[in-house]
Image (cartoon, rainbow, N blue to C red):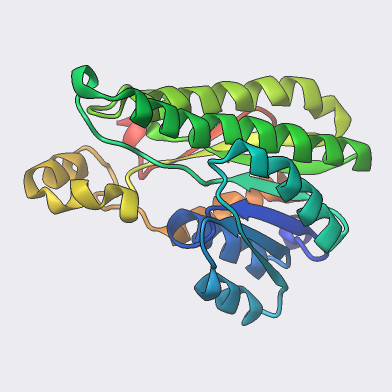
Length: 251
């Protein structure tokens, strides 16, 4: 059974691999045997060191993924560097917090551009490569706000609903072509994005009271789910949004 989870010889692209959830998933894939192409807005020296300490290759691509004109070159360079891409994790994203009546056009456009437009274009272009190879795995990072509205995050909630929709749409078209498209919806994780929530003692306590597990998640909690969705073990899983939330959605 363990062989179904092995990723030896596979090449994975992970966006936003600098730190947090992206780094955690990149390390999980590397532990399972995959070589990693990490894409982030700045150099990812820590992730590179950690991946290489596992005996895997790491190719660092510092790219601003919010600039749509960069994306076609990203796909071409990644495939050229490693020869192929078997796995894509669309993790890069941003959040802007403000009440809806004060939310600016710029904040809306910035969040939609990175969280949704980039996910669409990278999935489309890497997906085409995977279809030509007859196999591939695309894992999008959704959110609890793929199901809920949240507070002070209208653009983030809208994009994460969109990511869930894109996941299902691509899966419908590509499942028969050997490409699995699924998503992970992390719950409340101890990352930079949630720092303001965790710093607010009242809000943090309220959140923790609603999580059956009773604690914030960590990047390490996404290793197993990422490996599962990237491996042969999930061969018959398509268009699924896997909640990794300590029980939040079931509470």
